Length: 135
Image (cartoon, one colour):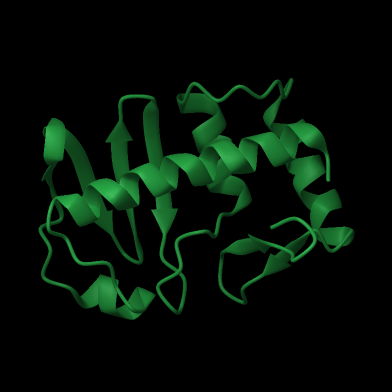
């Protein structure tokens, strides 16, 4: 996998993990599925521990971390280690990610190469996951 893409994905997933820890520490139960999350009675927006703001949407959540915002969706089985091209582009533009993509089109090209090379696996609905050889 392209090193810049791998670094971006690792940085994104680290931010998602930070958001998940904040949700959990703030008493928001993690879902067993994306449907459970969508149907939960959690407020659509609010504050987590430390005054960190969140916005619940559909199958996911956007959290404004001190390092920058991160937006993620839960997978069919409640996973939170999935991503897509759109979320990575947004994360790259709005965070302090250490990657050096020259443009969004370069990121998209590398994302497509990773799919073609079997380094990313499609979930069947929006999200991709690192293949076993990259996890």
